[in-house]
Image: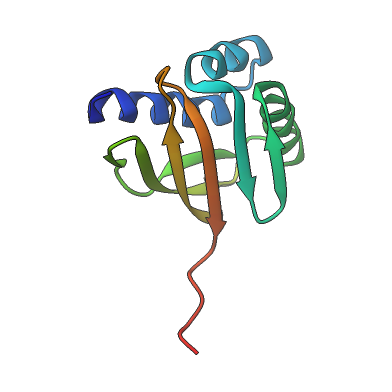
Amino acid sequence: MDDNAIKEVVTQYMAAWNEPDAAARQALLERCWSDGGVYLDPRVSLTGRDELARHIAAMQASRPGARLEFMSGIDAHHSVVRFLWRLVRADGSCGDVSIDFGEVGPDGRLVRIIGFFGAPPALA
């Protein structure tokens, strides 16, 4: 899979996080998220498209009008990706910042996303 195709899959994934309509969000996830895809961040561990869809819906409900936006380009090599994003609240203020790492499977959909919130820890 070429880097442009991988970048398109990640763009669809981010669009799913911002899609308020459940049916449209599910359609985006079907295109970009593997049936058994694993999503991990400091607060949650999920497996499968349906669990991810429910998590996205819950996040949207808890933060009405918020959206995610890219803070970097999408870096891709082989079948892995990394990108930065941030939460932008309805009032325009910014919340969480994350760096995400992911893997694209043989079918061209994401099989794993691992997110880290905030700045990296300082050296000890």
